[in-house]
Image: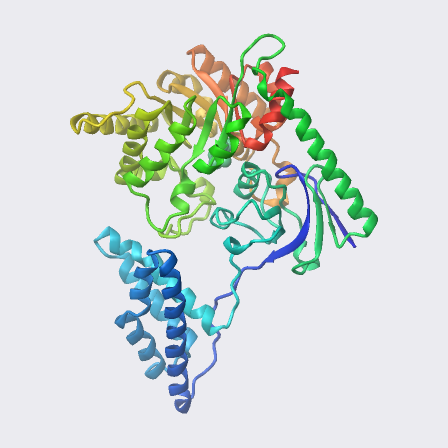
Length: 532
Ligand code: PEP
Ligand code: MG
């Protein structure tokens, strides 16, 4: 039996299940020399691998037509010629030959004029991966294939991994990296999965199938528990279930403070399924729809029609209010079909509104989709990562341009749609009054605001104890945002993780926060605390 204790918990709850150890695969090609007489052998290796990959893809394409393009690429003449040529004349082994050729061909696709062809670069890289996996005889773990209750334990999980997990079977998440507001924590909270992040050296103690108990309330993990400990965790689980039942009783009540102020309780979501799951929680709306997940789950930039369908569904599911945040990609969120240039400091880099303003076609597509969906409910547009009033004005101008287009095309939209902004940079705090004159509403993003005010990376476990949203400097920033927003009669909400922390509720009420938006799992607890 091994016990581990961590200081901070990422997503509350208690879980008992076998471990599913998720290990990253190393696809670095082996460097072995190829003697002249072994060349035919290497060639044959490639032909066999190609056949095996094609067979896999045929199977996949029956479930999803997207893989038809992959088949064409895997069977592509240029790719084969490049690989065989490198084996024959370059005396490269098959792994090196694949690696070099795939990189070269992917680069050619990446330079193409046509957008569709440019996006095929990701497919070429994916084929290269499939070839190498077969060459190295690696068994790849597929998080989407988990179909029994497990606790997933990994070095780190990226949003692109977490989107694949089925919350029905993933009972808990433990990662060695990451902080409490890293995106793995947020995803876990949205789905109500207990999670502990920044757990040093947990992988060294684990194998698949070993029983793990985790209490993401007090931050404890026990591997291979003795019977008495197991019993204790079962009891905790039962108590937790009872507590959940208890707070549920507040659901039917209006969220009003003892002083009589009506508070708006909203949820943060990354897709419409999460809205559906939270509809029975008596919410006042969606305070944050993170649209980047729609982009991350796709194999291409989602089209206007694809986005429109999702936003329209959200608007209809939640007629009270849906705040759609425009694309917040970059930082720790990447896209499988678009290569971001490596950056020294991605969280200080090309991220969020910066990308949208630099890629007007991309921005326009999203805004048109949001505007069209606004005809079906109460949608608000929210811009992330603002640092200057000029940026906000440019974003709003783009909204106006899209509105003008839609009017010309006689397509309906909400003429009075509100445009607001995330308050998550120090610049937005210092310019809060100027922003308040331009923005219809504010939503405080404490996850980023904390990391930027304190200069503490939100995902770095080494400094996790320094990442503190209760820090007086962060509280001062929050107070200033609320003051400035109220001066211009703006509704001020909060959609960072702090809004879902019951310990923060009294202070945030005292500062005058109007709207709390959080992971659905926290709503009952926060409502109870507000009502008092
Ligand atoms: C935030 O920064 O507080 C926020 C809500 O945005 P995200 O966590 O998606 O960066
Ligand atoms: Mg943010």
